[in-house]
Image: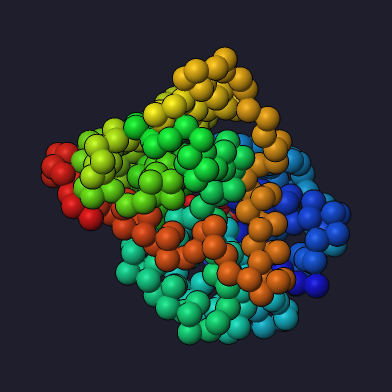
Length: 336
Ligand SMILES: NC(=O)c1ccc[n+]([C@@H]2O[C@H](COP(=O)([O-])OP(=O)(O)OC[C@H]3O[C@@H](n4cnc5c(N)ncnc54)[C@H](O)[C@@H]3O)[C@@H](O)[C@H]2O)c1
C-alpha cells in the first residue's frame, strides 16, 4: 500500500483529494494518510473555488492527519508519495528535497517557474531513482487522448492544422502576481502548449502576441503560432480576462488529411472527410482521476511514467519560455 501525503489543500488539492478518496474506495493500492496546508484549519471547513467543480463543498477530513507545516508533516509521517498542489513558485525546491529524501513525487503543472528549476527537478529524480511526474493533466484527458490516438494510428493521415483554446475570468490571489504564477501563459496556456508539444513535437519556431491587461500580472492573453517544418498551421490562444458570465472553456479543432476532430462543450465531434460525422464515445472520467491512477499504478509497478516524463514537462516549459521571448519582442519568431 502506497502512503500518500498531500501538500496544498486549495482548488487543486481538493481535486486530488477527491480522486484519492475515489481510488481508495475502488481498492487501488494507495492510502491518503496526511494533508498539509498552512491554512488547513480554515480550509477544512471551506468551499473550493476553481474552473472545474470539485466533488464536495465541505469535506470530512477526520480520517486524515492534518498539518499546517510541511516539515512537521515530513517529520511525523513515513510517506511513499507526496502530491504537491502548492502554488507554482513552491514546486521546485520542495520536489527536489522530497526526492532526495526518498519519496516519489506527483507535482502539479507547471513544473516550475523557470526551466532551470525544472531541470534541477529532473536531475533530482534521476539521482534519487524515485518517480517524478508533473500533472500535465490533458495528456490523461479523454478528449485529448483521442487526438493522440488519431495522430498515432494515422487513421486520418497527417495533421494539416489545428487550433487550441482555453479561457476564463482572471483567477485570484497569488495567480495575479506574475513572479509567482508566470501569468496566463505559464499557468493556463501551458496546457495547450503541452498538448501541442505532446502531439506534434517541439516546433522549429514560435511567434506569440500577448497582452498584459491585469496590473501586476504577467501576460494574461496570448495567441501563438507554432511553426513546423512540414508547414502545418497550428495556433493556440488563452485568455484569462473573460469576465462576466463567460465561465470557463477549453476547445480544439484539429484537421487531418482525411478528417477533422472538434472538441467543444465537452464533446468531441469526429468528421471523416468521406463519411458522416459522429460524437466520439469517451470515458466520463476527468483527466485528474486518470492522471493520479496512472501515477499510482506506475509507482506500484516500478514502471516509468512514459506518458508524462519530467523531461517532456520541462520541454513544454521551454516552449512557453520561447513564446514569452517572442511576445516580449512583439511577436518576432523565436527559434527553439
Ligand atoms: N492541472 C490543472 O488543471 C490545474 C488547475 C488549477 C491549478 N493548477 C496548479 O496547481 C497548483 C495550485 O493551484 P491552486 O489553484 O490549487 O491554488 P490555491 O491557491 O487554490 O491552493 C494553494 C494552496 O497552497 C497552500 N499553501 C501555500 N503555501 C503553502 C506552504 N508554504 N505550506 C503549506 N501550504 C501552503 C495555500 O494555503 C493554498 O490552500 C498551481 O501550480 C496551479 O498552476 C493546476
